[in-house]
Length: 489
Image (cartoon, rainbow, N blue to C red; front, side, top):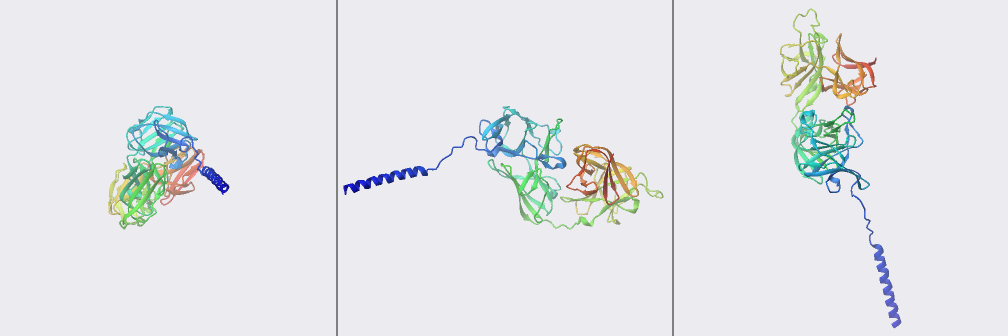
């Protein structure tokens, strides 16, 4: 019996020791990961602290030919919350800081900016390795961008976020801050906005489309301060977004997240007013003693759409230096009329200096300006109760990276060739840089043509193209249709 007890005790000791070994083997293995706990990339970092994901800069596109968003190597940006203090820009590779940059910020003078740039300007620094601290003067939500090519850092405080598009006549509808979370992002909204299905819109920051950083060295860039693309995935510089919901009154809400994400929500709060005015009922044209067809036929205007409550028709009208009918001894004159008929016609007085004039239905003949081509805009803001018109002595021009100017901000005028039995032609002969371009009227985008040279399309999303070289470019209008040709010289 004693021997059995001893054997039992030994067995219990062995079992306990196996259990202890088994428990030791089942213990979880904790791997200690060395280095920074963020992905590779650039970070806006509080001086003396480690990089954090909430202040990362992500690859961002810039403006290319035809205003399209294109990739640029080494360009980064994001919208982030920053507390007042000193910062550095750090580059992280393989969980280690591989580069620390700094530099003093200075404000870009407002008078050096175009009307497409931020109303409140922005700050700029040229960064160098281990440069001075980047000082942020006050807490706020900022747009931060860095360009490796030029070593430029842009810091712009977000003071205004706005909804802009056809519902507002492409004027800014400023949004108010709904919530702010420095760790996640910011939410803004605008209430009581009437939007109709198919209306195009975008979001923009500080009443600006872009920040232009071109330079003499030719390695500059244009950074976007607007969002487009789609409501559920806003992209810097993305295209106009067509409204896909039913007509109504909406609260528009935009969320800008610290991880670079951005999206819109629409909450319908009411019905939109019923539209009783149909622009399809109005095919406006210009007719007179000195227009290309005389009183035989109208020179049609193009319906340019509705911006807010304003419906517009646009065109370039050539006026002769004398009445086309030699037996007509009256003044040089013209009028607007609808649907090639005198039942509805407009008259009054217009000056060719861009001043808006109110016309009268059935009003007197309009005195024609001096001979030449004029850009005319006819509009109504009250569904046809009142008609207004403007006229300037700027006709057709070429514009774009492939045009003679090589610039989307510089027009090259087309000269009037003359009138051939009702077909008026405009031309330019000279060198083209080569690439994409468009033709537009009055230095304005309301009337522009793209597509292809042998098949022009009004307000086309496709630009015209030509290889670099010398051409005679001719734009012709027969009163109804525009055509073009480009002949190598």
